[in-house]
Amino acid sequence: MFFHSSQSEALSFKTWRNNSTRKISPIEGEKLAIETLKRLWKNEYFQTILTAALIFLVVLGIYYGAQAALGTPYPALAVASESMRPTLNIGDLIIVQKIDSAQINASKFYGDIVVFRNPYKPDDLIVHRAVEIQPAGNYYMITTAGDATGGSKDQFSPWNSSLLIGRVVARIPYIGNIPLLLRSESNMYIFLLIFIMLLIILMWPSGEKGRPTENAEKRRYFKVDLSHVFYIVSNIIIVGLLFVSLWGSYTIWQPGATPPRAIILGMYRDVQYHESFPGVKAHLSQGFLTHQIYCEMTGGTRLGVPTFAWYPFFIIVLILYNAWKIRDFWKNWKVRKKMETTPSSRTR
Image (cartoon, rainbow, N blue to C red; front, top):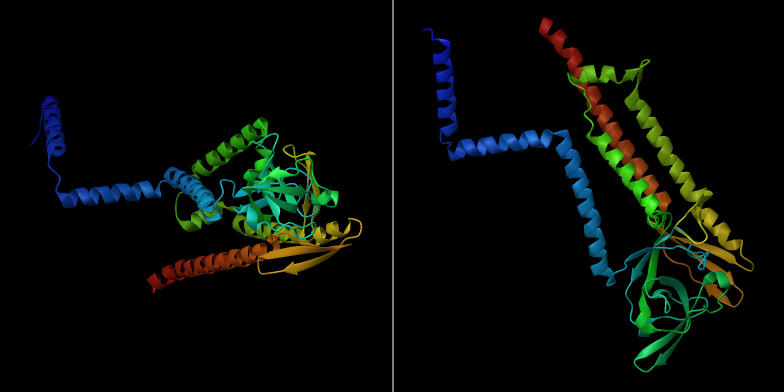
């Protein structure tokens, strides 16, 4: 049967209207919703945005969880001065826990390292070692000193215990350099620009279509598989970071610190740095993911802070990364073997 153009258009419109007004059953609606979610889940842009949102939520959860667990609004702080060297260095991230003033252990050598508000500038936070504590009515008067001064009291002492924030219970080297860099407004814009560029790169469509074998051939350049190059380079980087965490010694520009520099020290270099101070004999105590440096000095032994050890972390990363890549290589090898044998089996 043939129709004129106007009749065909009228029929098409009628069909579209009937389809659009047709009621969808609950089962069909559920199937349609599932298909829509599947297509959305496979979308690269959606996956990138979802990953970024999850990372943000995880970081936010860790921060507020740490506040609740450690009982302080400042669970993690970056060291921005040299007053506590060599115990704490610029760029260290210190973990702070709330403590009652009466429980503070005060001593020139093994006193608690505490964080408190600057009596003259309450917005500024100071981290020093408690060397003396005296009761004063309902409060305590606390005397503190920086380790770099050899135990001489600082210009803030004695200060009222109402200014106390908490006690330093651990430190993570290097990580504090990131928030220190963000203290500068210009650096914040630079980091924001880098983040946006990375987001654009991640969301940029790959443009690779076709079978896995075709995509693999596209990744080859001068008969070299780029995935293998990436694997080798990644291992070199991880091993390099492992050696830096043990024997590295670098001075970097740090505009957010006073003075504007930070020292990157590996674990063994840090021990040597402690011993570079007059009259100090350093001892290293190691745990699974932590280490601690004690300084034997004239008059006593100065306690260090439990420190996150990067080298076992990088060893774990190296093992897990290689195990994951070997699993992928083995899986891809089996797929290629299967694809190679399938045509021959068909010809038989």
